[in-house]
Amino acid sequence: KQEVTQIPAALSVPEGENLVLNCSFTDSAIYNLQWFRQDPGKGLTSLLLIQSSQREQTSGRLNASLDKSSGRSTLYIAASQPGDSATYLCANNAGNMLTFGGGTRLMVKP
Amino acid sequence: DAGITQSPRHKVTETGTPVTLRCHQTENHRYMYWYRQDPGHGLRLIHYSYGVKDTDKGEVSDGYSVSRSKTEDFLLTLESATSSQTSVYFCAISSQRDNTGELFFGEGSRLTVL
Image (cartoon, rainbow over all chains, first blue to last red; front, top):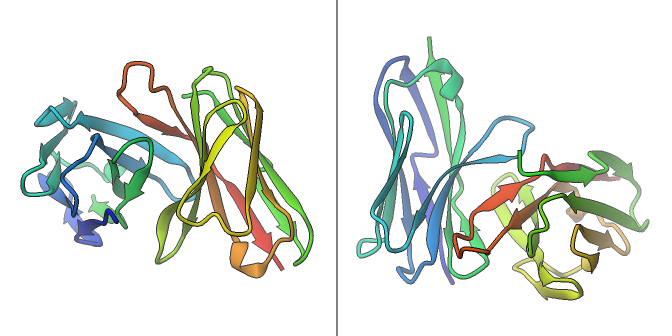
């Protein structure tokens, strides 16, 4: 069974810092890996999708990388802002079914 | 926005009563999913559908049934609600047209079973 782990579970940083969120998975036979953002009481917003054949994807201040051989993905957030405060979830797709990590709750302080 | 509407958004019901949650999409996507989100357990797949009348079980399907009679609607039914089914339920869709498999989520339905 695929397992997805996110470390740290919570992170608090001052505004302006660059930060890295980690996601590890047990089965490297993945279809793709997706990063989401969830605000309190809201649904999940898709941030980045990395196909299994890709190594990274970028969107604005966000960069996600994928290393299938080591079973890891990272989400890099540049120049963090208070508006980035949310829970970030990674999900591993092994064929139409996503397995989610527990999330990293990020707080960016002004 | 991905064009996903969940209803109702909030519901309080009593143990033993039937409950149906509806997910409606305007994207004409093939795949639809129902997840539940609980503290300490994260998001877990209940059921999914890969076409009209084509459904399959997920990780936590016991106590739930689904139906998909039209491409745009995916219904989740709790035949006899229990307190353990108190949760936030999310519907998701995936196009699978170009094999990206990117998932888009609805806003969620918060269910409380007393």
